[in-house]
Image (tube, rainbow, N blue to C red; front, side, top):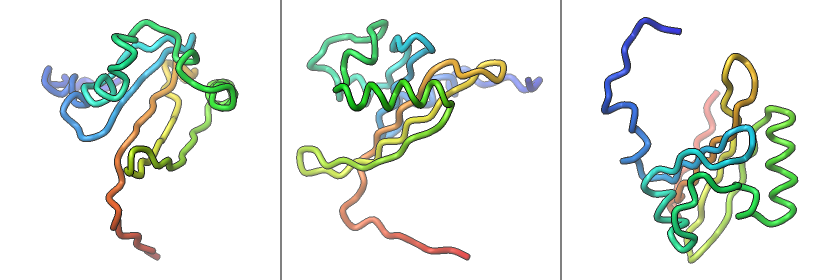
Amino acid sequence: MSDYEVPAELLHWADGIDCAVTICDADYKIIYMNDRSRATFARHGDIIGHDLLGYHPPHAVETIKRLMAEGTSNAYTIEKNGQKKLIYQTPWRRDGKVAGLVELSMVLPPDMPHYIRG
């Protein structure tokens, strides 16, 4: 741990960013959703405290369980309502052990450049 004190406004860094951030704990309970994530899932109401697995189809549940068990990340793109999105799922750890998953979902611009750097 660092001796640096995190400014209070930085503790809510994800609330104002332009992508959805959803976090669950090791029991798959949703423990955090930023503003964009809450807007994305508003049709379900307030789902903080709910089981993340209940909002995913069977093939996605298998993937989520594998990510937790193996401590690995997953990335893919989807297209929904005419928007292409990047989904990135990665474990977060406490004391070296997987403590849950973070999912970032961001809209990709249709003309997004791709660079190859050496």
